[in-house]
Image (cartoon, rainbow, N blue to C red; front, side):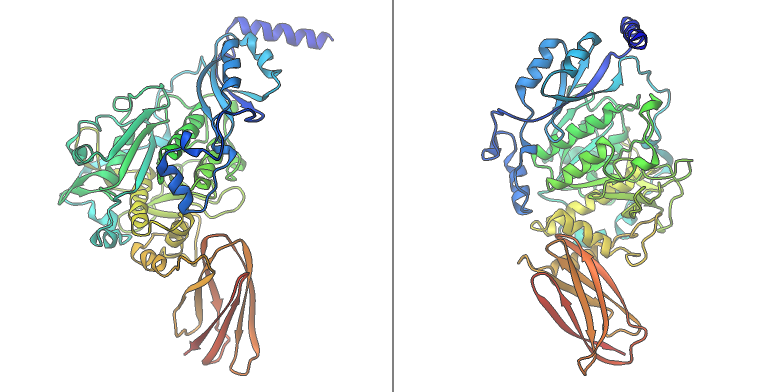
Length: 540
């Protein structure tokens, strides 16, 4: 009893000192008695968001329903000022000054959790976080951005006329200083390609004065100055969303990202580019650990997975911790359903600052890489420069993915993601520095062109063919299943038998060791859940 009394007076003392004031994430138990229904999604989702789901056979669920307004009103009446709500995680972020109401909130029947995510007394950091690391090295020569496309044959898609038309990219970042008045972006504004902008940090639309990081990120995708600098998706549409407060490092920013992603979903964005990552915070008790980097622990990684499940292709920078003690990717780059992008130089050599894998549960990360060392960008002063950081390799990749999606508008985000991974330069030997390697968008295009839109399992390619020692099967799976691969000689004898687990709506690269086989003709059989595929192959 004495111990309990002591704790009571200790808590009261800290309340008097205003410790505990700040932003809280308050989670709810349900969405009962909602005024919205999954049968009427147009009340809370845009037509484009609904079409994106329909194309990928993604149903509307209760996770799409807005948070119960009555619950929020109850908290407001108690003195908790709502900042924003998250429908995916069914919570509200509220600012609480009078911490004496916390006990009452904890005991509300519909409240399941209350977590302090930013203290009112969090000090502004004196230096910009490593995740916004940008190192400018020299002025850019005329047209020097071309290699950012050519190293991954992105110019192949541009030459076919695919420059992102009709695809919407939401850019989640720290701010877009001067982006509304720079000549580098004049074509965006003149052609109404900026569909909107929103500040989730300050709750207004002041995204053009807060920080220049997003401006430089945007330039790698959206600049359209032929002969000087052309971004990877100059004809795409964009939403500019500020979720990162560059002067602090708190858990609140992960919740900002969450609601930013929900906004992107609701307005119908196809792709999210996020050149952000989180590992350590001003309040060290909130720090993530490497064990948290399993893709399903942090709020922001859960949010990234949610976005993917809604049919959005999430492209995120791997991080710039390669030379630091941490060295690993941060969150949300660890999320399994997204593309995490590392960095190479213009010769395709690993950039030492690029964060490494694996995830703590052993998965390959980054997924692929793009130019992030000496990347061609335009800064907030409308100057052409070279800069370093996975902050730039990520949007370079996001822009190319927009072009690929324009070419194949009926493909799913999983199909695009796996096509890029399986045609990258080290797809058969992925590692923890480059992942599957440097993408080849010419090969990815041809691979996707061979996928039939008939919702059936199929073998896309067998290569090399004829083969000398080994060959590879590119298989498209429509479901989570185990496939049986068998190789027969001309007498009908089984000489090779393997089983492979494959994922739903994904491409898989399956290597087959044929070193021990004699030269001749063989019959390959693949038994899947829906059909048997038979094909003759030749060993030279």
